[in-house]
Length: 275
Image (tube, rainbow, N blue to C red; front, side, top):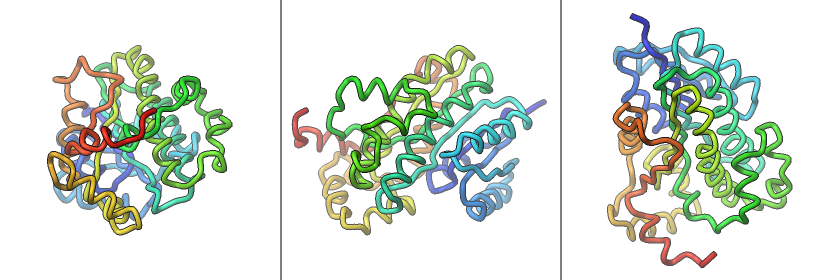
């Protein structure tokens, strides 16, 4: 019997945890821009009995994403798509974050919409930062949701000098992820497939630990202390949420965002400026 194909883009802590949750009985296609990292992840998962293929992909390059989609379709029916790849403010410049975190998600949503199987599901990893952003003007929200992907970074308000520092770029990109998934749900639905996003809070991955060690770390720890859970999240917390959204039991859920932050946004939102 032909196995469905589960594509996981980004092999950091969350990507690897999700791959473990959804990979059993399926053909796993792991993709990342870092060839060495994807090889290590594949070795770990093969050692656990998973059927793994790898691919190097640059999500900010539409042609590279198209090649990944073609590779996935050659393996079999694409039943799961998980996009976790991204850069954080401590890792990259404003321009790089806009290319990878914003444009990259749009390319993945577009490209996989053309090949996903009936009954398939996708998950994009956004961030609680997208829930904490100042409200954008309605015309900018519409533009983030609906502008053709190759024209996205040509929007005047996405010019790096206009966006500002990497932290501002990250917040804007993650808000765009949520909007882009909402807009993509109709196209995925035409193929009988679903797509949703997850907005993690402060998760103890390598990227999360880098942020905690940065100059913003004290503020992040203060938010955790204010939250109902009063702890960092784990990759497994996000994998559990992804497994739910990817499972047929959530067949009536599409085009939505699941906030998995231990209650940080609920605690902080009353303290945010109005507007």
